[in-house]
Image (tube, rainbow, N blue to C red):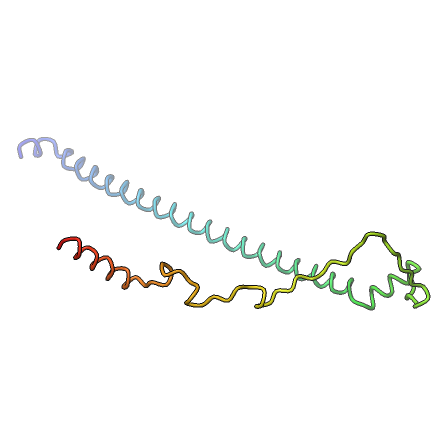
Length: 147
């Protein structure tokens, strides 16, 4: 107590040091809060930008599908064919070309007659046994082995 009475500035220095410590702690907490908030805001903005890009891509895709539909419509194709000097084919314009050695391929017919019919009689007993049957068989076999 004598030291404080002789030099009262020591008490003031202690109070100032505590106050500065509190200010530094509050500043660090505020800086941390500001950093986290700014990162969250940046992430939110990036998500918004990506959603806008997705919407723009979907709209561009829809526009291209609309253009393709209009270009491949029957009226548009017919008009472009006439511009290129194509004309509808008449029966007299058809010509057939015979290729020697060419055999028309036969379609593969899949019917139930071509597959063997499965029944319980022609399935092996190993594949016709349930888990409980197998377990019962194992227990009986081990009981016989112990006798």
